[in-house]
Image (tube, rainbow, N blue to C red):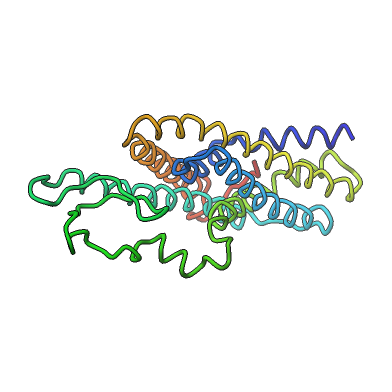
Length: 262
């Protein structure tokens, strides 16, 4: 039981790894409610726990050995995911900057405005036919028409991010368990409790990230744009650094890959 308790708190500690926090921040930065941000953290933890439990159990129960090149490839996918999340955030921010720098003369101008629950910004007018698109031709309207019946599409992004992170970290956690726990059933139980700890830890982290974001969004109209740009730049830069480290320093793209699960 003491080992399982240790696994829970180590899971909470694992949630604070830099690549985890940066990736989730690119999603949380667009949330307006602390509760919704906490659920994003929980969904990330579910995806992370799934791959940790699946791959880790295979290593513990069946002696699965991960070759260095495969391990580096999985970790390289985390770097690519960070780059993609950063670019997704920066794409929307750059469009806002382009609209903001445009001329404000005449009937057309740019500011944040809403269509039901979709908020965006582009140059438009308020006269007949001057808005630039129909009310039902927004990304949110398309998503609602296409996936509204499923009720799960908003959950897919943090779950997918958690799956990739769990895949990259499962080997290190499983090797730690193998070095500590002799009974396979207790090793699998440790992985499960470790996963529950990551869920709890990421829920606390995303809620803490959302508190200043929610306050700033209510007090300052454009601060969320700058927060999104900052999180996007950080995610992009961190992803590129990791990609270089894995690809060239650790040897994924060379003839002598060196991989130590961490």
